[in-house]
Length: 100
Image (tube, one colour):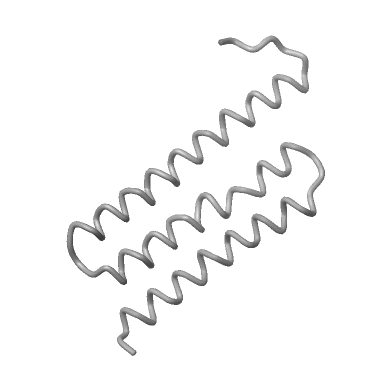
């Protein structure tokens, strides 16, 4: 096996482990904010690691750049969405009116 293939497999398994850890935490945690917080490893680490693994398997070129860009957009977009959902949940729990 090539070194790049082994590195891609390691990155893939690390990413999958982060996703499974987030899913397991969702089952174990009870509060909505705690569950939302449990998605951080999946979103912040899992998706970028898997995108890096796929890009490494694709080799240098446009396809790898597109894959890395998609992974970056998912990581950043997921983080922004998590922040917005957390703020809305906190406002709802405290009885504050939401601002459109």
